[in-house]
Length: 250
Image (tube, rainbow, N blue to C red; front, side, top):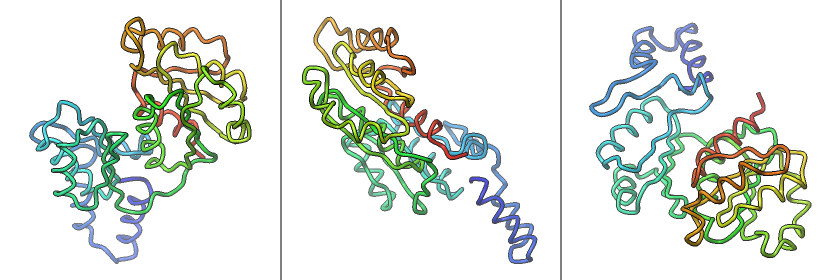
């Protein structure tokens, strides 16, 4: 339940188009709602501009189902991350309007068309094809939060000419997310080319000495390019969310 929907309810009450009792019932579980295994923060859209996001890993289908139903009752969009194929198949049968983004491992439900709130474009860049799942998670997150999103995949430093050939696209972005494994060098390169915020996402892609993404993480934290910020390993969601806040019109 966001600012616009609350104002709409109050306006209907003021105009006599909705009873006080009906409005009260809609606000009944505000600001939070206690379920069997979760407490849903319904106040979050007002505080942060987007409802609570469901982290699906280690949650049962039943727990995810309960949370989705609670969010839908508030007419809010749903974003659930780290949803396996098995869970997605069950949830999409229960909620026919749900969309499972296979590569991103996310489920989204849009109750109304997503309103574009971003003042510019968010560009998501992946160093390699193996980094695409994490990049896709960032894309799904940024899109459902109301942003125009472009993507540029497989342009890592092993063939830097692939990146440099897309200078027009890179320079047109308002915020850039760069997803890379191995040594994690690509965000530094991109950061040295632009005057926009660059969000670096280390992935767990790499051989033994990459230490599950720690090598890329440390490389990004030690970037020599100004304006590069870093999220956690494989955290495409966190990057998409942060980019949305940076790109917000107000």
